[in-house]
Image (tube, rainbow, N blue to C red; front, side):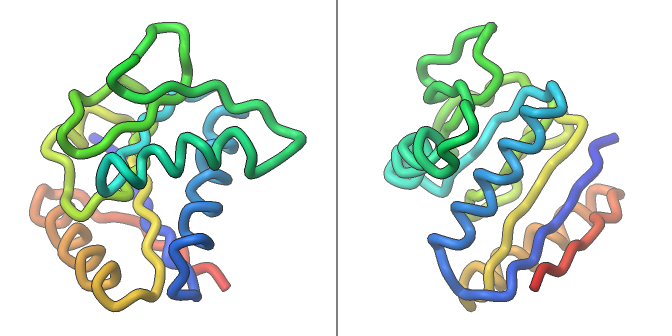
Length: 141
């Protein structure tokens, strides 16, 4: 059964949300985990692709777009319409609960205080509960 973690940010900032997502990717990668990031759409996936190269000068986070998936690349970034990439960790930044979430040992959801994203996050929290999983919540200041 997947372990689901919700990270609730104190700000309503897409930039803050993306930077925190990069921190989660970096942490998982440093622990030897493979990560699949699902962005809200192709535009956000491209933005995250660029950000992972530049967000931390001291870190190297090898990654590819999901459409270019390679077995030896530990981090992939996709959008909801892309075929999911096998990994240990699913970082969901999309609007919906991915139907394939149970294929991952860990699922991370990053929610900021933007009203629409809060509402969508609550819906995903309920969906995980309805699937029989009690998500853990981390409220960040």
